Length: 357
Ligand code: GLA
Image (cartoon, rainbow, N blue to C red):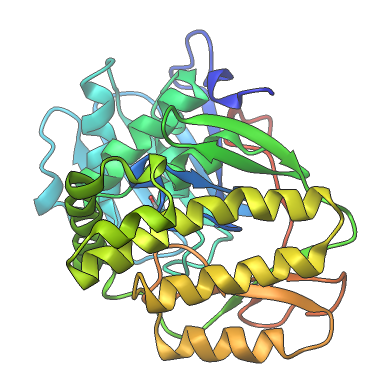
């Protein structure tokens, strides 16, 4: 087992005034949804789509424009106010500068942000933004530390108490592999992906507007279930029958069964059984819809439509839910690229370099 969280990311040496280019990939989660914040298992992969920050360091002001959103972000590193920062995407910049300032000295930066990720689709565009910003502003440390810094900034910028999955996937990606992450200790194990299957992401057409409060509710419900039966990562689905509250019981049943599905899915892939892997994806979707209640009709209908197609082994909502995307496991070439359909390749994690161009 290799654990890429210990890999060093970031530039060594004095890069003041140098041209900086920092890239962070988005991620698609194959399985293991709403398990990260209870110390469970997930299997995301970094994808080839991502966010790039280009520019130069110097002074004490940060000035950034983005090709994905309106407005110019102008900040003074000595006078950060996350909530008051406009335009709203600039709160990620202010939050990242503030998060880094607690660990190191941070100077100014002038540059541009560009992204190939669809925003708000469940492919972690905001984690990619946070990670690329951290590297552009001068973070240097391990991939695991970078993920933690990005999670802290994400929580400060959005108020959503997100787990660590998106950030670890973005910083630890390994091309050709998905990442089995055990959130009891944040160990990352690359799992080779077979060549005879394709991962395709399909947008449901519904953007994720409710994610904030509903996500926090689910997190709270999982914490409440934990006080009743102990850590959900150590519990089995059968243990959840001891929970008398029907809502908490269903939430815990999802998490405990989802943890089992992660390893069952990995076994199915390793055993060259994509049909079984696909059935496990569909079981995950049903559990997210019925027990965790984070699906919406558009996602359910899309999953049904996809799994009825020849060559589609299985599909499920990916990410927090409440809208966004479905991930499908297919035979190669079954779902062609089209607006809202992205065949995704698993890619390496975030990097930063002195631009040569
Ligand atoms: C969002 C969060 C992650 C994770 C997923 C659900 O993407 O940012 O931490 O909880 O939802 O699996």
